[in-house]
Length: 293
Image (cartoon, rainbow, N blue to C red; front, side):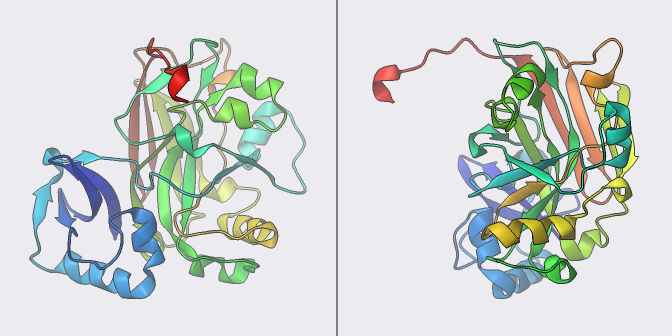
C-alpha cells in the first residue's frame, strides 16, 4: 500500500495511491488527516485504509493533486553517515564499527517536485540518494529481530548536503539542514509491499547523467540494526524518519566536482519504493521579518 500526503483544492490530507489515482480518506478515518496521525492510529486504521483501497471510494487522478512530503512534521529526522561499503571505498575512510547518526532539522523537509535551493553562502551543494524508513509505532528498546514490527514503511530521500558547512560543523547538522535540503517522497510504501528492504536497487541521476547505481545490500548497518541502536538511546514516535545512508557516486568525489547547480534536476529511484524528483534553483532573495521572530 502506498500512503501519500496530497493537496487538492487547497485541502491537505492523506490518501492511498492506487495506480494513477489516489483514494481520498477525508472524513472517513476517525484520526488526524496527517501521516503521523494515521500511523499512530495503528492496525485498526490501517485495516480501514486497506478496505478503502479495495473499495469504490472517492478517487482523484494524481494529475489533479499536488503530492506533498509524505511526513510533513515528524518529531525527528535522523540520518547516518558512511553506511555503504562502496561509498566508504570511494572516500578512502575506514569502515565504522558503530553507526554515526546526525539530525536533519525537520524544517528542511520538502516533497517531490519542490525546488532545492542552492544557498547563497555556498556552491558546494551535493545530492545523496537514500532509502528512508518511517516509524509506525511508539517504541523503545527494540531488538533488531523485531524492528520490522515498528517500521511502517519506506520512502525515497535525498540527504542534500552543503559540503563546506558540513566540514565546518563536526556534528554535520548545519551542513545537512539548510531549508529545502530534505526532499522525501513521493509516498510511504508499507513494509509488507516492499518486503526485504536490503535487496533494493537505488539510482540517482543529475539531469540525464547516472551518478549513483547501487543496492541496499551494501549497507554496513541495516535498517533493523539502526532501529535497535536508536531505540536503545531514545523513544521513536510514529512518523519519525531515519535515512539510511548513501552509496558511492556523490558529487564531492567526482573529478571535477559534480555539485548541483541551478537548472539541474535530480532524480532518485529506489526499486519498489518510487521516484523522487526535485529541480535546483538559486536561494530566493526573500526578506526576513526579524521583528516577527
